[in-house]
Length: 474
Image (cartoon, rainbow, N blue to C red; front, top):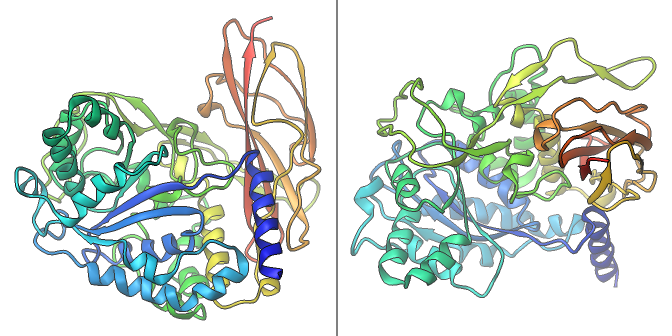
C-alpha cells in the first residue's frame, strides 16, 4: 500500500512540474567503452537516471581511440553493480528497470573502424537493433547518444536506405535524433552529407577544447570548479556509495566527457530535447551551416571536411554567474562575465553535479536520510501570448520541497533561448511572485523566462520551470 501511494504521489509531482503527463525520452547509447574511463563514468550516471530516461539499447563500438575492438562485457559489469543497489534506488523514486532488463539491451557493434564497418553485408547486432527499435510502434523520437564512433548508426542508415522504400526510409530517419561527442571516426561527416534531413547535434571535427560538450570538465578561470575536482568525485561519488560508486573510475583525461550527450534528456523543467536552441544541461545549439575553416585539426586522425549543410552546433551564451551574498538578497551578480559556446553548458554544472551526487546517495540511504528535488509550482501555463506593454504576474508560491526543506526561488530572462534579445528587468528576482511588463516589439517575438527553485538540503538540488511568452505588437 505504501509503495502504491508513493508511486501515485511521484506521478502527481511529475505532472505538477511539467504541466502534463511526463513522457520519457528514448535513447540508444553508442560507446567506445574502455578507450577511456569516462565512458564507464557516464554509464554510472546514466543508470541512476534510468527511471526517467527510456534506455532502449547500449551498444559497444569502436572509435578513433579504439579501432579494432569492442568491450560489451564492461557495460555489463556496470549494470551488475547497478543491480546491487536497484532496490534501494526504488525507495526514492519508482521506475528503475531490473538488472536483467538492462543486460538484455547490451549489444555489439562491428569491431572495425569507421567506414570500414559501413556497406553491404556489414550489419552488426547493434545496427540491426537500431532499426528494430525505430520500427517499433512508438511515435517518440529515438535519440542516438554517441560517445565514441558512430559507424553503428551509419550502417543502420545504409541498410535503411538500401532496403526500405523512399517513403519508409524518410519516416524512420525523421524519428532519429543524434547527439555525438565531436567526430570520433569518419562516418559522422558521411552521415551528415548523405542524409541531409538527419537531426544531428555536433561540434564538428576533433578540436575538443572548443567543443561545447568539453565544458563539462573544463577548468574555468574565475569560477569555483570544485564540483569536477578529484576530491569532490571521491567524496560524493566513489567512496561510501556502494557498488555503483566503487565502479566509478578515476579521471584519466577529462571527467565524463560523454555525459553531455544525454544530459538534455533528463526531465528537470529546463531541458527540452526537441529544442536544442533553448539551452539546457547538455548545452545550447543553433541550426546553421558552420564555417570551421580556421579550426585546428586534433590528434585523432579523423579527417576534417567542410560541412555541406546546416547542423545543430555551437551557440554562444552570455552569462554572469551569481555569488552568495552574506547580507541582503541571498545572491548577487558576480563582477565577471562570460561569452562563448562552452558557457551554455557549464553554467548549469553545479546543478547537475549536485543532482548526480544526490542520486548516488540514494544507492544506500533511506528516504529520510537523502535529499530529493524541489517541485516548482506556478500560476501560469508553460506557453502563452501577450501584447506589448501588458503586465504579466507570475507566482511560484506553490513550489515546495518533498523533504520539507526551505527553498530559494530565482527568476531570470534567458535571451539567447528566444528571439527577443534585449534585457528584461525583473524586480525582486528572488521573491516567489514577480510582475514584468511585456516589452515593446515591432514584430512577433519570443521571451524565455526561467524560474529556478533550489532547496537547502545536502546536496542542494534544483528544478526549473521554463515559461515561453510570445509577445505581439500592440
